[in-house]
Image (cartoon, rainbow, N blue to C red; front, top):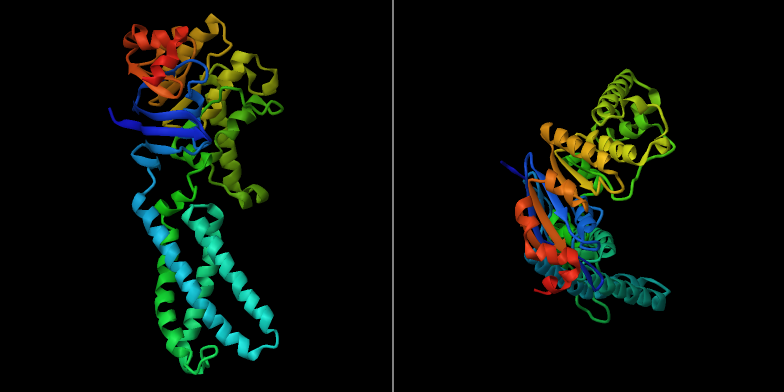
Length: 395
């Protein structure tokens, strides 16, 4: 079977608290993979990292062979830091040019001199932010690079009319032309580098949750998140949003294609409701459903996005044994549709009857993985559930 999800040494820290520490797991196409562990083990944090609600501190995530999160490039980190230093050096050379061009021709000499000092200070703060990989520095850098590029072109096109270097008889062109020759290509090069995915990742840019859903990964939540004042049918129709092709203009003008798409989505939403056993409640408000029905509605809404991987966060929580048995049958039906399932569950009876492979977390550490039979007899797992997880986390 092809590997649909691969997680490699994933870590997530909140300040000094390590919620996940180098977690590695994988899910193959058509599998039902379980994630279990005591409360606070990091299970929901793992799901939040997979769906881009959290950005991992370290590690890699690959979904259908595409990197969702990859290890920060140390090569690009060094390159950005070197470019930042060169940018500041060119800024120090820019200041005499700025003063030489403006001071001899203005009455406000003190103000112009202080303006140059101020711009140099901004450059210094910008360089520091750039080297610390702060997103504001990434954005502000383009303003300075474009202005420097324009100034370099201006200097190179009129080298003989620039006057003299301040307080000297040296033609300013002798100083401005070399500066422009270096600065122009450097600005273009750094702009291109800042747009690279590996560099943007250093500054916190990532695929958002909507992009993850579009790629084919959908999820439910530990705490039910439905639109309780909308109908059951409308809740499922919202799940089709990533598949819709009619844009804002089509919705405003109510074009023929938009109406046809709306009708098709409504028919498909009803089919999803029938699939999860809620076809008879389609026009009821979501808030009037029983707890177990709300759980199934969340699953129907997630299925509406046509996922390849479905993440279920404690779907059996609060269910009675009959509802849990019904849920197990539903998840098996989802697998039969060719959808891989990654599930978090505390109900061990549900997990042992459902999962093909189980991963066990404790205090953010992966302490065991294997088949349900392997997990059932694993001493580390037994110890974690009986209160000895701290000792194993340390080992």
